[in-house]
Image 1 (cartoon, rainbow, N blue to C red):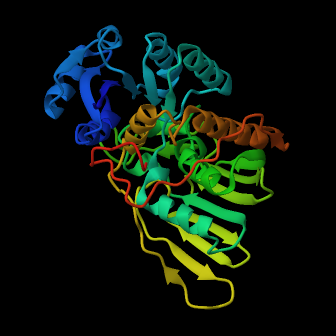
Image 2: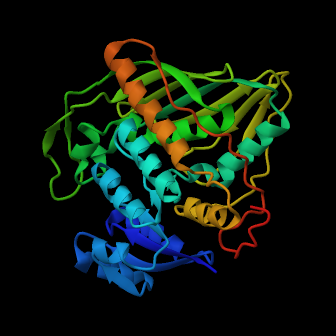
Amino acid sequence: MPLKVGVLGAGVISEQYLQNLVTFPDLDVIFVADMDPQRARGQAAKHGVVGAGTVDELLASSAELVVNLTPPNAHLDTALAAVRAGKHVWVEKPLTTELAGAQRLLTAAADKDVAVGGAPDTFLGAGIQTALRAARTGIAGQLSSAVVAFATAGPQGWHPSPEFLFSDGGGPLLDIGPYYLTALVQFFGPITAVSALGGRAQKERTIGSGERAGTVFPVVVDTTVSALYEFENGAHATASFSFDSGIRRTVLDLTGEKGTLQVPDPNQFGGEVIFHPSNGDEAQILNTEGTQAGRGIGVVDMARSLKRGGEPRANGGLAAHVLEALNSTLEAASTRQRVELKTTAPVIEPLAPQWDPHSASTFESD
């Protein structure tokens, strides 16, 4: 039987989720809720969902899992409400805004014997999974280091209301960092410590599109953050996240004694994986295998894990660990001191190449 799902939050991101969730046979989306019930009803009607209304109506419904797409500052309270109603919960990134809140949520879920999952689920896509399976075969040998570089000129040129991305809780690290750090943890395991520096190239930005084009607003957070991450297995990664660059970069390179794996953008579900041998042999383009279905595949994996009695790959413990790593990076940049992490993350097995969210699962080989 499909798992009954309710979607909480009918904002912009719900469009991407709903257009996918309703196509997955292991899920039965039965309700859409929002603080604005009319908006919820509009999204429900658009995507063929029979139920819509208030948050309380969702929590009283027969939904078994709540997909929480509320704003980040509401994640904790709304996820706790779902857990207390006896429902599993999937939370869009970040899991919460602070580690203490994430730990509170995970404790409450354990007490209620329900599961917590969290975005991003891009690492379950064909690109990262192909690279992960290749790394497990030892194609590059024992991985020892990584280079991460994300850079753009910032979202102010295309986003009609970009101020929140340059205010507290914004910036390239918190906006894009979760994709890269979640991917790095798949390859190297838990992060144990971080050192970092941060800065900003501009004190103000100008909105470049929409009705408010030409509006100038202040930059409050660091718009370039450079970090050194240490991992439990002895590996390390250098990383830079920037909204200050005129050159766009999405780099994730993993190096071992036999060569380097060039991994595609972890903010996407597909992409090309290339192995560059260290002995000078010609680079190999690997056969990309897996799903590129998009947002919501983590919810499918979660549903299947609940059916078979396992833990979701994009689980709450992983999301909490990445959250701590992000906040520790900001702390390290602010204090200019190395910060040690307290949490860990579970080892996650790669998906089978044939894993398909569009096929009803037998729950035997996922």
